[in-house]
Each structure stands twice: as structure tokens, then as C-alpha cells.
Length: 334
Ligand code: ADP
Ligand code: MG
Image (cartoon, rainbow, N blue to C red):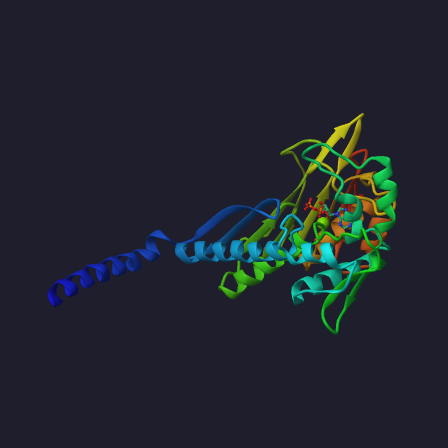
């Protein structure tokens, strides 16, 4: 018996040794790409590591982290923390975990910064749109729910980390910021796992880790009116980049484009812009700012970006013209 065990053991050992001795030749210089349907979009991880197995474990760890965040923050999940807030916060403060609490507080700060263009209570009206089914709120619903878009109706309380709404009918949704948070967390996980060259993307939000091993990453900005046509390519290293567009989730009715970025003033899709792209150090900010600048429009959007030294922006207006923030404007155009 003992002999059998021993021989089996040595066979296993040989296999392990074989795998290890083949590492330097076979599994070197590997880029690994993996995708997963998460957060209502496609999450993509692209990373470099010498060891293929470690690379796929690392990608898997990102998906696990993003699933965890989605379980907290998705309004489509009845048992998420945010769904509990939307159900009960008009009656009494709902205690939440640190992450949701902090992200709500950051969202409210960004509402102040953007003078209300970014407003997580957009969903008080936004919940009545269904872009897949081609549905928008009727006039009565819009009139009744529009006053409930107001970030000042959301009261976080630090002492018990609770969220309270000051009126019934208020609803919050982190769709304009949670994907940025998710890719930021994804990259943090990769860093912990010893990865130093990677991209984590969730829909329109990407966080780049390091460079492409000696070269910058090249990020393409899509032509909002032509799928798969890249309008502009920008080289980037170790930055976050987010694009908000009117072409991702929309339907047409009577010649009008109903898309998913809502003006808090009208409760209707914001017009004047086809896409807004923001580049900067923090994906939470680039995500929220791309949505904000889309709502604010070219002029006040780029004026806001000019006040934020670490952030740059590219806005494509309703006629397809491109506008750049000062830090990005090509010298030839000056
Ligand atoms: P995506 O990456 O999904 O295209 P964006 O960053 O462009 O997302 O943000 C659009 C999402 O933000 C919408 O689907 C919605 O969940 C949310 N949203 C829409 N309007 C606003 C707004 N005015 N303020 C904050 N969030 C908004
Ligand atoms: Mg955004």
C-alpha cells in the first residue's frame, strides 16, 4: 500500500516539475484577456504576467470583486443594499455598509461640484424609462416625479452610516459612477496580486494600470454615429478614461433619440452632446464627470474640466464637432 502511494506521489511530483520547468519557455510574455457579463455591460480584463495561471487567477479575482460590488449597488437586484435604501429610506434612515455610504457621499459632493448636473436621484424619473422595451414616462408621470430629482433630498448620516430621503418617491441609482468604482477596485486587486500592466474596463469606463510594457496604451474614442469607427486615438499611461454617449442605450421615437443620460432639470434625455470623454487619475471621478459633462454641454462642461487640473475632456457635440479641454488641445490647433 505504502509503495503504491509513494509511486503515485512521485508521478504527481514529476508532472508538477515538468510544468514548472516549462514555465520559462512556454508561458512567458503572456497577455491575457478575459470578459464577463457584469453590471449590465461587458467587463473586460487585459493583463500581463509571466505566469499564465497567475494571470487567469488575477482576472478571476477582478470578476469576483466586481460581482461583490454589483451585489451591493445594483438597483436590479432586490436584495442589494441600494434596493433596501430605495424601499425604506423615505420612512427612516437605512444603515448601509461603508462602501455604499462613501460612494453616495461622493456622488452628492459631485452634485455640488457640477451644480446638480450629476444627480443620483435622476432615477426618481429614470426608473420610468426602459430603453430595451422602448418606453419613456408619460407626461403625468414625468410631472409628478420630476420634483423628486434633487440630490438635496438625500441625507447621509455619518454617526450610524445611514441614508435617509426627505420625501417619498425619491430613488437613487449609481449607474453614473459605480462602474468607475468597480474598475478602480479591479485595478487595486490586480496591484495587490503583483500585476503592473493591465486594463480593466466596464462598458465605457476603463482604468489603465501602468503601460503596455514599454509603450503607452492607445485608447480609441468611438465615432458616436458609426459603430466600430474610431474618431480619435489617445496614448495614455496609468490613467482612467470614461466615455458617456447617447449611442449605448437608446431608442428612437418620432425622430427623437431617447437615451440613458438624463437631465435633472427636465427629467428627459440631455441633448446637445453625442459623447463626452474624461481622462484623469481616478475612474470614480472620470465616470461621474463624463456623465456630468454630457449633461452640462460643451461650454459649461469644459469650463468645469478647466477647474480640475488633473482632468481633461473631449466632447463631441450634436453636430459631431470635437472640443478639447486645454490640456489636450493639440498645439497645431492653437
Ligand atoms: P455607461 O458607462 O453606462 O454608458 P455613463 O457613465 O454614461 O454610463 O452614465 C449613464 C448612466 O448614469 C445611466 O445609465 C444612469 O444609470 C446614470 N445617469 C443618467 N443620468 C444621470 C445624471 N444626470 N446624474 C447621475 N447619473 C445619471
Ligand atoms: Mg459616467
